[in-house]
Amino acid sequence: MAMREFLVSLHMNKILVTGGCGYIGAHTIADLIENGFEVISADNNSRSNENILEAVEKITGKSVKNYKVDLCIYDDTVAIFQENPDITGIIHFAAYKSVGESVKNPLLYFENNLNSLINILKCADEFGIPNFVFSSSCTVYGNPDIIPVTEESPMKAAESAYGATKQMGEQIVRETVNSSQNPAHKAPAVVKNIQAILLRYFNPVGAHPSALMGELPLGKPENLVPAITQTAIGKIPMMHVWGTDYDTRDGSCLRDYIHVCDIAHAHTLALNYLLQHKNESNCEIFNLGTGNGYTVLEIIKEFENASGVKLNYQLGPRRSGDVIAIYANNDKAKKLLGWQPKYSLQQMMATAWKWELKLKEDEKIF
Image (cartoon, rainbow, N blue to C red; front, side, top):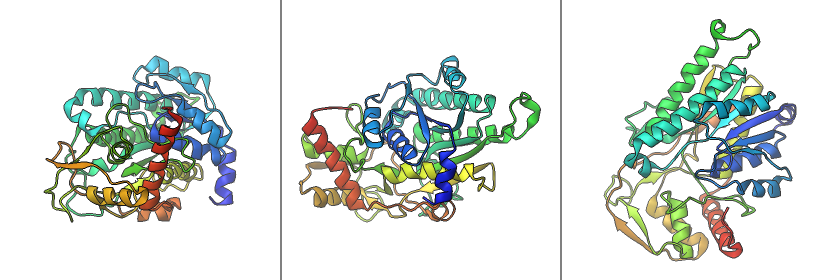
């Protein structure tokens, strides 16, 4: 990070990270602290464990307070802001994220993901918090006609309710930001307009190099890499490859896999981008991916090479909600945010495996 960016972040007060006990949220909190920010978390721990913040403290030397609040309840949400009037930025991760579950139970996803976002934006507007970063997803592109996708690629129909909540969430942020530019509806004491960044990230994988925190889904994993590592360690007897007849190199789905620490650092850069008023519009979009696409079978092979473990897997039929093939054009994030993915695919697999081994060694679940 450039010295000027670092000095800007040092003079900030608090950043609220919603979903701060989650996989990406916790890694982002660690990155923010390491770059001079003070952070608080809001997470009801319905699908996470507050103990992960102990790992953040071991990594950074800083303790982080978590407000165990259901953000779908407005009165409980607004109480966080009343207690912390010096919040200057929000990173909003809090959401359910299982594609398969969202296909089976779409109303759960619409209710949770959208209501929590609406309440957070109400508070941002009411308390005049000018900097807002939204955790979006490449699922907003649906099944794209042309890859790699750029930020200008058209949104196709979402393949899942989860993807639909990200499409709707982006629209809610845009409309709120545009409304906040109109002083007519604002109280006289609230003079700051909201500036937002929508970060569309692709497939976060891997774990912190310290192996103190990583991805640990509740129940049977639906994401590829934890399914691989849990199969390799023996927690799962066999994993399935869903779909072998897609129009890809080997018939399995193709994705852009990006290390979670690279994703986390992009949020720090996005906040500094807003703090330095580099944004040309009040709502900007950035893709976060490596710019490379790998199939499921290629990821399995890369994991086997990195770990030395032969994986037990079975080929199966297609799974509802899966996009066939997508990867990112990340030129905009590189140029404007100064973001550069640092971790190779081999390092992604190696850190994920190191995390799984550490869990077994410690017999401790965060």
